[in-house]
Image (cartoon, rainbow, N blue to C red; front, side):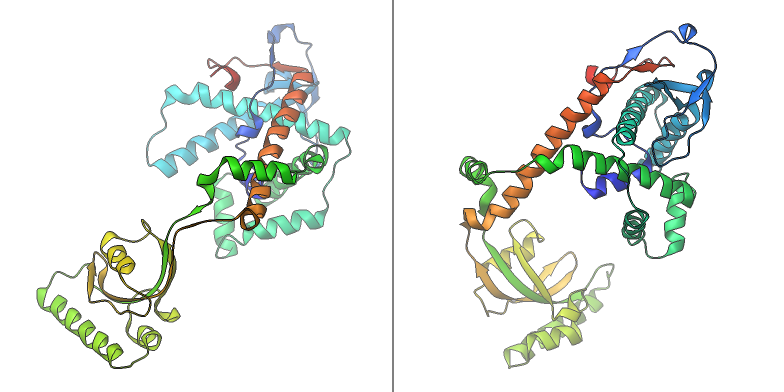
Length: 358
């Protein structure tokens, strides 16, 4: 349950992730319910409102989940799917989507109520900080506001939704995460049992100069480019500084960095380029290499043989991995227990199994 997950939840209202799987649901005939209105399940940070049984899709510990919210989440997910896939949503899948959305909203309601019972709150400063981090993903405020509009949010609605998710995050942290530790023995056992995770393949560090040929079909232009690169190569062989020449003449995005490509293993570059890079010795200048992107010359600056990372080198990554693994398992158990203890009544019929039955 990293911050990015909660930001995605706040942005999309898609609260049906793996952390929310499971939990018992009770289904009753809505005709047997008492008429009238009860408070909606809006959580501690959201203003409550009255929702009648007829306008609700579920009741969680006496509080209603409104039909309008349910339908908004369903439709926003359909719109997002169509925008991302460029395909029309298959209406045969609607019941399954409705089931996932309802299950997610019920689980969120249970968590919000638990947070309220535990007096869990988040400060305005934390909300503002998280909002700032989210806004920082966009080039400007207009792009941020457009993204909210596309998701069906006003800015106030989004901030309110973000606060709700941060409250749930704080609940999980205080009730589940704070008690989790990973021992040195557990880390060493994981290291010993999973050697494949710590194998470091051979790598080379290289820099290159490229004259691009993408989109060029005129043979005379291509020949001129190649001849130009031959002259550049000869200048370097005669003593010109590779980095300076790359900054002045290379047409690729690495030019400002002197053509530096950093380190890479096999499989990360196009085959023609990779084959030459791994055949060179440090300081050796290649002949012209032709790829789909253009004509290159390259120089390997360092070769790192394959090796196995030591335990001490891997310790911190192992600790993070095992901690997150235990946190996710514990969170799932905690949420499932809350769901099973909750009084949940679904007020609509959906022709799809719940996630635990799929």
